[in-house]
Length: 400
Image 1: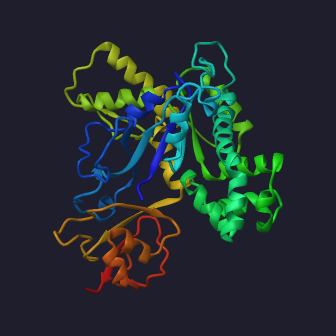
Image 2 (image 1 turned 135 degrees about the horizontal axis):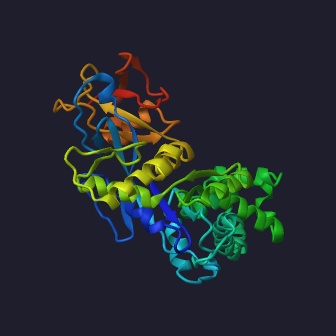
Image 3 (image 1 turned 135 degrees about the vertical axis):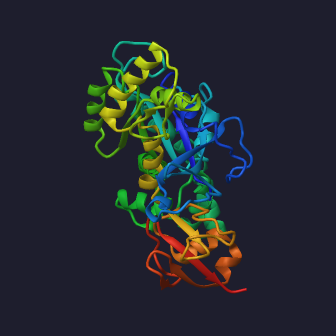
């Protein structure tokens, strides 16, 4: 499964800048898992420390990239259509927006933390930043409610006519919204109802049930953009106190894009998402460029340890979705594949996955013919039920 992150936000919040800053246009995407890139889809990267530095070997990444010991692993970004009030009723590009987010595993919601633009994206002095957070969730909730509630009676009749298990039937019909059977059970638990009560829901109880499904099935990371604007610091603390359960990342998309552009022009050494940069020897900078870079270093990187842009992607994939990075190899001594390439692949896999799951992710035939695996760090033989750990280096032994 390709991990898809939806980038959402009201107009003029920095969504397009975020998208540009993380797609790393200088990287050739031809060898990465996404062979068809639509206009509103791009490739971003999550980052982790490459094991080549730990073991002192030269790696040869095939499905990812290594820059200075930082492994960049591709994920898919969906630049979702702009969001306006009443999007769930089809206002603006509401139908397209809500269709796009159904494709995403997790959302990154870009907000203007400076409070200088209102919910419509128009300039103002002191907008309620928290309103943006509520606004997005409400639009998604109402969209999902509108679809499911309109079909609820039909579902009930079909379950009775076909003598189907309600949870199984609903899970099948809700799967296109990213809703699982576990989400349904958890939503019922939230309402203190049993699984036998699901088809008895109506009115406000049905609405609460669907809203809870919406919350459980569509996680998000709040990207508090424009953190370099003075008013943003107070607003950041405000929304963190109002929404302590939400993942909120301070960020400057403009800073990340500026640093990426400076690196592309050969002016600085900078790995996307890094905590610092260095000037290239002999780089010819104008006074304006020097002041701009100094400002970013003092007001963004030193204060927040990064621009927050790549950190938000990492947070979404590793913490919210619960993925880890594992390195499959064929030679457990030299950490190479059959072509003698060290650490060729970096695999994103869910933290609950087993060695057998990894085998199937590599290739169906390898999973079908799994015999055993070897932990290349410890050189110990492990079975198919071994639970993978972050940065594991695993050799899979399969029959023919």
